[in-house]
Length: 104
Picture 1 (cartoon, rainbow, N blue to C red):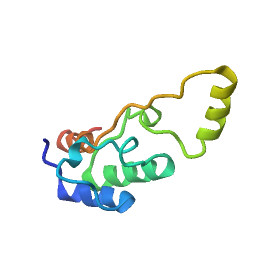
Picture 2: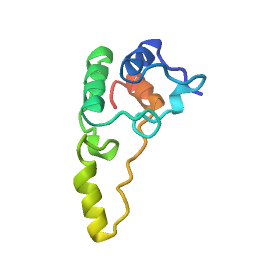
Picture 3: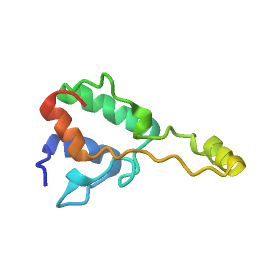
């Protein structure tokens, strides 16, 4: 279990409400906490500003869908019989590591 900054937890709880404890470091922002789209963008912007973390090279679309993307994607999957897109997990622990290293 990775130690997570109380300030980071407070930032995330501003978007989700109380985080489940005792291991918030393993929680995925999208998969477990349901943060995506504009909310994810706003959280990452505040995260970068508050903790001085560079987001240069961070690829948002690998970890989060945009709000509203589900409808066109759902229609496309229905027409083509493709599986839904899988997003990588970006965890609270990853954000803490970004704080420690200065880069996400």
